[in-house]
Amino acid sequence: SLSRSGSGLRLWSGAHVLKKAQGACEDAYFAGEDALGVADGVGCMVQFASYGVNAAAYATELMLHACQALRVGGGSAEEELPPVEERAVAAMVAAEENADAYGASTITVLVLQGRQIGVANLG
Image 1: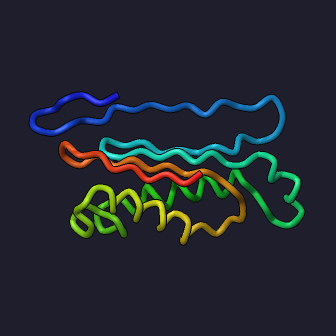
Image 2: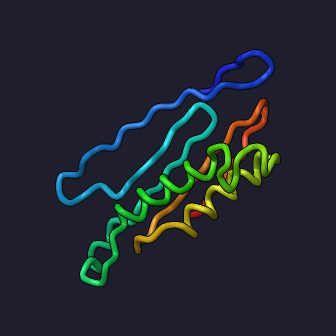
C-alpha cells in the first residue's frame, strides 16, 4: 500500500511465494522502500529443461538484476536517470540484459520517487 509521508509518498509492500503441489515455483519478486518488482516465470517451460531452460532461475535473476540496477550507482539509480518512468524501464532492461539463465517470464517494475510512480511491464 502507499501512504503519504511528508511531501512524498511511501511504499509499503509485502509478498510471499506459495509453493506448488508439484514442481518448483517459477515466480520471484523484490520489494524495497521505493521500488518493487514481480517476475512470473512461465511454468510450461519445464518441458525444455533438457535444453537448459529454467524459468524459475530466469525469474529470480530478473528480480536480482532489476533490484541491483535501482541501487545507487546502478544503471537506473536516481542520480543517473531522474525521470521515474525511465528508471523503471532501465531496471527492466538491465534485468533482461544481465540474466544468464534461459527461460520465459513476465516482469513488472515499479519505482517510487517523491510523489511520482513509474511502472514498466512486459508480458
